[in-house]
Image (tube, rainbow, N blue to C red; front, side, top):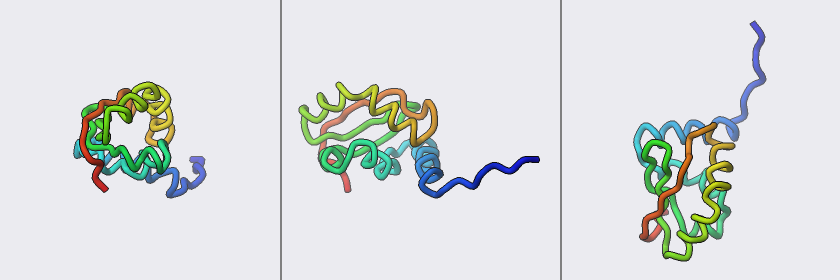
Amino acid sequence: MARSEPKTLEHLLPRVLARLAGESGKGAALAPVWEAVVGPHLARHTTPQAIHGTTLVVAVTGAEWARTLETESASLCERLNARLGPGRVTALSFTFGAPRR
């Protein structure tokens, strides 16, 4: 039986967080992955709130952030899935409110 190469924590952690978020429905577990995908500036104005199936609900501080994310949603889903595993996030939904930190 061939052994596969050991996985790094950096590779495994996002997938573990995705699994926890999916099981609990709480998207906050994805905050480190979200920040890595969107960058620190955008992360200050947004935060993952919940995950319903494959839809990630993101809290935004204003409508302009929702519009910005909406135009980039396909790319964001692709980048999230590159870290979390294929098909984990297929859509983004937005809610207004102060991001929790």
